[in-house]
Amino acid sequence: MRALIFSLLMGLSISSSRANLLEERSQLTAYGTAYCMSRLGADPIKAEADLAMNGYFQLSSYEGEDTYRAVRRHIDKAIPNTVPVYQSTGKAAVLMVCLSLGQHPDFLKLVRQQDRYLPRRTTKRP
Image (cartoon, rainbow, N blue to C red; front, side, top):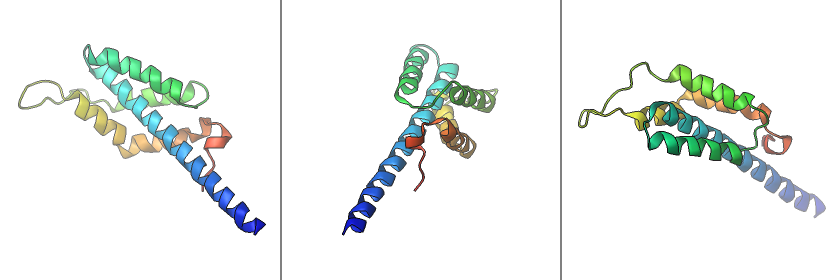
């Protein structure tokens, strides 16, 4: 009986750790998308993106500046030299570019690599 209870508690702990890890990764991905919007957007989008970056920074648990520097460096390299425009309006497709960059496999791989900068409690893998 004790073994069953222990197993259930461990399962809940692992599930909780995995949820924390996924939440941290999600916040870092959102930080990268907000950074992209900050770089490409004009006011008032740029101003709100700057606020969002600060919010995601404060919500996350990554230790040190290396994680955020790596994200910014990746986004800076990935931003196209010429941002496509919407055919219907002629305006820059900033949101489309930034959402695409934030979901690109190379960026998601970088986000996973930043797990090493999280406190131990959020990096346990099931």
